[in-house]
Length: 549
Image 1: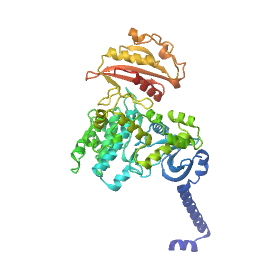
Image 2 (image 1 turned 45 degrees about the horizontal axis):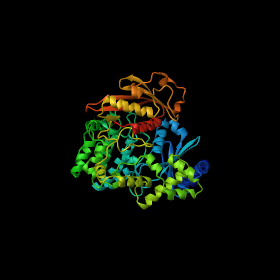
Image 3 (image 1 turned 120 degrees about the horizontal axis):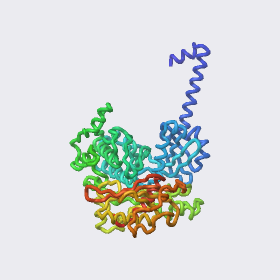
Image 4 (image 1 turned 30 degrees about the vertical axis):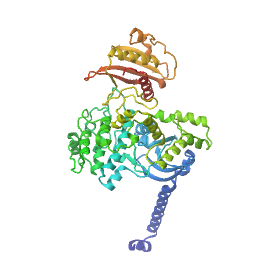
């Protein structure tokens, strides 16, 4: 203070003016920050035009190419989080693919332990992603604050995480960056998996090689740059998270990155003596260096430690997205209709998973009503769970509680798998069967013919296929009597090569039958060209037609 007083009294006029300018600038900066925290200064006025359905609040966080603000949905009064992503910054940082991937994945998902995306609003300069608001921060901060957790609390978190990860895998998505920083907690301390920017959509017949994610949580095959199928790297990360929950520390930690990698690749860690026998058995099975010997998600579900105190809603297979979309809450529907929306259009939008003003209001009301009443599940998820659980035979319930298995690589929302199909103990890139290969291929061709797919023989158990979405009837050039004549091909090469149809609705793929070591046969479908999600739709429909697998 003495120095400042001296400067004001004795300094030159120039110095005095500099000090005045400095203080004025500081005041302006403080006001700017304050207004940004309360109402989004400098952004609010411009955003009103793009976000008329929301009242923006304070900034929750600032990232490298945008910020996250809390907002209130005007029609329902419920809070949401809005990611404001600057297009220019995204492009400059070469993060367009990361953002696009996260939005695409979150649009697809409806799960109580995965962050919900309500709508995406795009402008020439920004992308506004309206998401579920969770107020309790990251699981990371929770662990830092509390240290190691009691076993029951840790198990509850772990069960929710595995449920969400399993849902991702069933929908052909590997997260690849699972860590406590990407696991958010809602007001009831329930887990919400977030940040799918590094996720990859799995393609059968293809292995991943990208080294991504946080080093401490990354699997040995990831940091080594080796090929990996996908699910096994998430299992490793879940093992590290479980260790952190129960121990309050990381199993692999070193300030020196080469030393850290050496520990991870060698599986070098210690198990504290306070861990229970069940935890001491499960963690090492998740942190196996060899991914082929590592425990799988279905096997984790069957583990006695995981099964202890398992909530009912996690003990049965989750409903697919289409089943959830078909079940409409009449009370919530009427509430949204009373806001001025057309009932028929709203129902149609809900059934087709279309995001608009009406469906956003519907899901906000539905989700928040259920949070108030029970605290930890999305309403449409719980209702579907209850219905599925109540319809099951007692023996099926007992079997489900023991743990359900991954039902096949084509389990994709929009169609889902039929209960009559057997399930596998291990994750397999394809569908496995013990039937005779000729019988399998006959059924495959029947299914392809039913779906109006054109095919061309390459080998005895390999064919190229082409499917045009949205065109009814038999495709020109397809061999209609192929099944009956045992000809697994079409004679016209134009079936595959003709590109006259728009590429946006054409899917080209290969079908290959392999023999495995276990005297089983594995049917693999690999996309060659065309939209990924259209291919997954086809896969789901194809699977529904099969009778032999």
